[in-house]
Amino acid sequence: MLQHAALLLLISSGLSVSFGLMGFVNLAHGALYMLGAYIGIAVAAKAGFWAALLIAPLVVGALGAALYLGLLCRLRGPMPQVLASFGLVFITVELVRILWGDVALTLERPAILAGSRHVLGVDYPAYRLFIILLGLAVAVGLWRTVHRSSLGAMLRAAVENPAMARAIGIRTGSLFLATFALGAALAGLGGVVAAPILSANTGMAISALIPALIVTVIGGMGSVSGTILGALIVAAIEVFGAALWPDASAVLIYAALAAALIWRPQGLLAVKGHG
Image 1 (cartoon, rainbow, N blue to C red):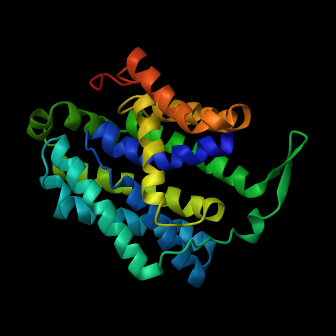
Image 2 (cartoon, helix red, strand yellow):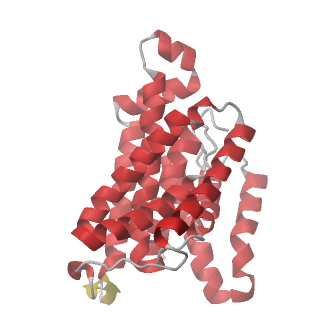
């Protein structure tokens, strides 16, 4: 379950940055995740897994920055953002089909992460341990960036009161661009990490988006801690639901989402200003 939660966290953290902190409804997040997987596979074929783990998020982050500068930053209001970003999903899927075909591709995990490791008396797959540790590292780094750095303070100020932030010298445009690029890079990181387990296919642009949205909404808008909690909740529901109640496992996360929206519509750990 922890590995599934860590993978959900990697996928959802980028959406939490753009959707939760910036208030930008980026439904193209799943497409960026898909691109991370395919670009990672292409890079790994030439330079190996570790190069792919570094290069794929950087490329996807740069693509996200280009999309934001060229189109998305000009959109105002949730409906134009939804329509434009969802349209980008279909465009990206078709581009991936042209470049890589419509067949599932996989990424070979490195030799050092093959096999299993003995942890607390249990043999656990090494690559899944790597995903858990990477998820923890991303969670800690993102939390410190948002809550314990001057960059996070400027970002929160720019979101709460853009005019005042500009008046005191914060370059809100550049800050939002960097934030969106970070969210895109995190989506790309999630894609390349997921590829050895789930394989890359064009359906992942949608299949990854729905759990990421649910994690962000349940955890709370703009809350890194909420994203962590949401990922744990959704992972527990999916894993234990599939084992204990397989016939209803597909709808359990939607039931949890509905319950969260009724009980705490602002999210379980929403930050002030997002409730």
